[in-house]
Amino acid sequence: MHPAVSVIFFTVLSGAGFGMILLLGLGFEIDGGAGRAFVVSLVAGGLAVAGLLASVFHLGHPERALRALSQWRSSWLSREGIAAIATLVLFGLYALVWMTTGDRPALLGGAAALGALVTVFTTSMIYAQLRTVPHWNSALTPAVYLGFALSSGWLVATALGGAATAGLWGLALVALAWALKWAWWVRASRSRLSTAASSPETATGLGFLGRVRLLERPHTGENYLTREMVHVIGRKHARRLRALALVLGCAVPLLCLALIHVTGAPAVLTLLPALSMIVGLLAERWLFFAEAEHAVSLYYGNR
Amino acid sequence: MTSLPASTDKRLGLVIDLDTCVGCHACAVNCKEWNTGAGASPLSDADAYGADVSGAWLNRIHTFEVTPADAPAQIVHFPKSCLHCDDAPCVTVCPTGASHKRSEDGIVLVTEDMCIGCGLCAWACPYGAREMDPVENVMKKCTLCVDRIYDEVLPEEDRIPACVRTCPSNARHFGDFNDPGSHVSRLVADRGGIELMPEMGTKPVNRYLPPRPKARAPAAGPVAATRPQTAKADGFLGWLDAALDKLG
Ligand code: SF4
Ligand code: SF4
Ligand code: SF4
Image (cartoon, rainbow over all chains, first blue to last red; front, side, top):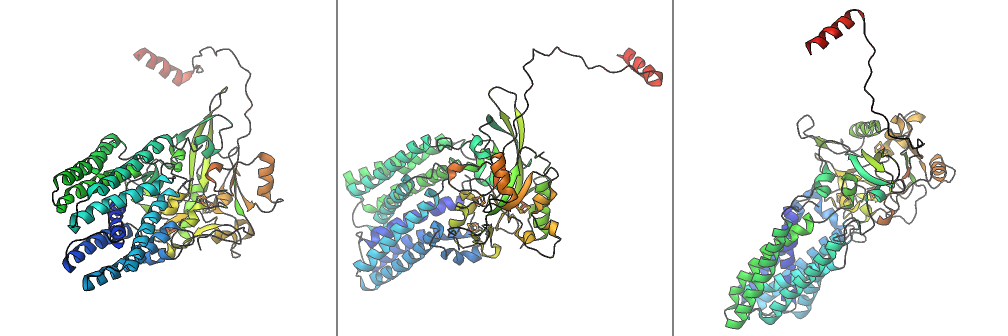
């Protein structure tokens, strides 16, 4: 699949943003008064909104985006839009009360947290529902999205919150998220189109005659399908990108968190592992798209 | 509405005969022509006269080579357009309601002025039957020529899809698969119509008729190498031939 930069940024940033909203809604400890509450809430909401805006401007017709809220009965994309907006409204109210009164209403916070959880889940289901892309078509996909949202959100919230260091919880969340991703990678390496029983033979129905090979594409040039779903752009650097994702996304954050934990350094230093993890996740997300095979490639010479 | 109808009154679709298709691309060209002139918006191309031409097509002809275990390879031309699936995943993923399946005849359509161009439906289709229009930025797909088949202004013989109407080798057939007596249902029953990628669970309506078995020549010994023979020319050409031979 073609890795669209806007969608990569959207899923990583809004993941971290909604992860933060989830934690803050559940009462994640933040130091200081209204000023700090404002900054933390602004970053959480800002990350979530920035991601959403990036994905809206990726559309062919952004001016019609509101229409996308209408089909929640069948469409995960529609559900995502509704969940995201509802969550942002709830969280906005929560932040307002928090800043003005210093109080953190548990019920409102809980609702925003639930909304954030549902939003991240619906985002992941947009991919996980697709039978046409065997890499994504798995319950591990939502698990990975939730894991990364929660762990990256935890790091950013700790860095800005100043109350306590990420501690063992932070370490555990980052480790858990990458353990899930590792399982996802192991499964992905085994689930190709051929393991889903699809091949040029089933795509053409000609398997009963013999082995099927593409002789000629319909047209000499590229088309929407080949650019969007067949191209193997970026798979060339897959190994280096995976190493980058693991080092910046996993090893560096774990090391930093352990050091901060042991030395008792101030929480604000968590900014370093937080940023490192987000950069690592951009590489991870690039691979999520670039390495995924789509069924239509069987009509364009893939096996 | 992007929920699928439980059943549709008719199940209109195409039968494509892989035995008679000669891969001339006439159906694709006529489809492009019809859908550029009619419909909600033209079926656009980007850089149409330049070096990097690329455009939206609703029907494309692939060519495959099939190699049996015990016989020489054969060529199969393979036209592919939307299969108007019963369980169309492209419809249920659509967030706007632009993609829908009609309950009266089962045709899968996109309402262009509702489409936000998110492209998710194209990801959901295993067959590559949906393409983004590079100029309009909305999703395009085969309409089963809904703007021909019901148009009483057209002469009756033209009230069939453009691709079916134009095919010079009669490889495309249009009809109602819900009617067991229809031309298409009988073709599928007689010739063993094939469903593409049944493992994707889309339940396509369109069917493909497999190539008929080839008559196989009895196995012969290796053919002796032969040199191309040309008849000896005489007169002026004979002189020219000899003169050129001399020149080496
Ligand atoms: S062929 Fe593709 S576009 Fe057409 S109905 Fe089936 S899934 Fe949808
Ligand atoms: S591209 Fe248009 S028709 Fe397709 S899913 Fe998006 S809004 Fe629906
Ligand atoms: S039915 Fe009409 S729109 Fe569909 S492939 Fe044929 S000519 Fe094109």
